[in-house]
Length: 257
Image (cartoon, rainbow, N blue to C red; front, top):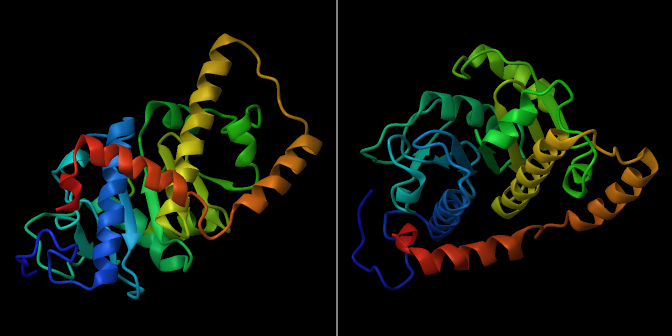
């Protein structure tokens, strides 16, 4: 990629389209937000975003960098086989592109995908019951969650068929004994779904630690889902994402580089 010498014009700082540059900015901001919230795992775990207008190309974090080191220009552009589609000095984690590429390739609508190892989300993935409808946030996810039994580190292509089958038409796949995968039609939707999912798991872990939870009855969940579906519009989560972007911009705007 050729570096451009116009750092203050808002134009791409690498040789890419304006649409790809905006996607890079959004994804870099997302990495910084997750880092700010403590939802990262050192140099591991991944958030990916499909490149606009390129069906089989997506952006992923450079393997070896902490999430607060991710910038718009150092994100790595790869295809579903992990091949770099643009020059980059950074490698890509095998477990990252194998799992994410599976979903990007199989699901036309899955433009943004995140996989994490936060303690609370992992704890719920490791529990027999999984996510239970006992709090405001967890009720939101009724009907949106699938489960996939643990098969070890996700680096084998032969697991892909089972991953796709188990996600079905849902937006959350809880990898049992491992951690969650969430996906959205936009990076804004994925971000805010994850925000609520993280909250749901945090509340569940705390609730079960103090006693038996109050499970929300099915008729109330049905009302909750009806209202939820009214919220899931095209710009769902956009205001939230922009607000958190402003927050991390005040802390460190180097993600824009």
